Length: 291
Image (cartoon, rainbow, N blue to C red; front, side, top):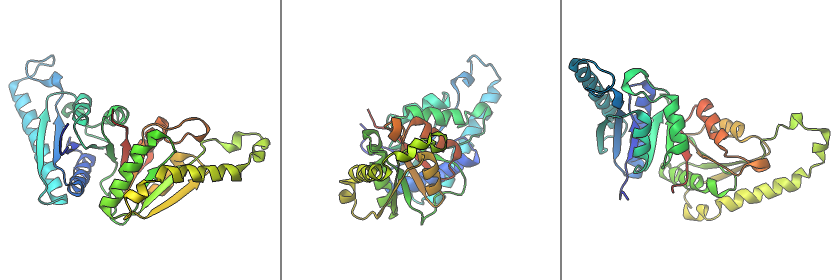
């Protein structure tokens, strides 16, 4: 096991990739860990491989990839002066490269969109694959203008064991940022407009009390471990995606688990994290339990 695992950022030269490099650099400085900038060159483009081209083509590709990495390193240095950072080129496709990096990384950071074409851009398919299969937390940086210094960290909590790693990560990030934490427990994804009138006979006040207790139990122990973090609790009868999106508008980071309880109280389902990936405008951290 790596003693001081690095934060790894995927680099392809796109604007969101540069934003991811800056975000990752600030995160590495907060965590006091190294930064690792990784660019993937598909193995099929290796000289002498299935796709044949001149040596000059591959030399140009290599020079361009090194330029992109150097540019990303400059972006990182500007975001976190003095940070230890390394650049790496791996001759493989982006998904297997980043999945392999996730085995050892503290977290993986990606932009939501890449450049495409032959440089192994960090496209939506890469992000989706990492969100499902990464062995460490994944942070997706959607825009160039991110990380407002005065915003809270927002975490989705569903009361299941699967959301516990997300809660821990959110408390850690809030503490490192000296930011407040908003713990959101949206306890129904049912479309009440489609239900019969008898739904009004459901004892909502009693259910609400139970859900308040669920959130309190999920936070128990963490508030004692992180006494410096000011926690605001939000418990609502609503869909998780809509509540997290609403809370994200002023947040500097949103944290969710990749799977949740399911059923009536289902919150952090795979569909929730996937929906947030497509709609959220703030950095999103998806935390899966390490195995």
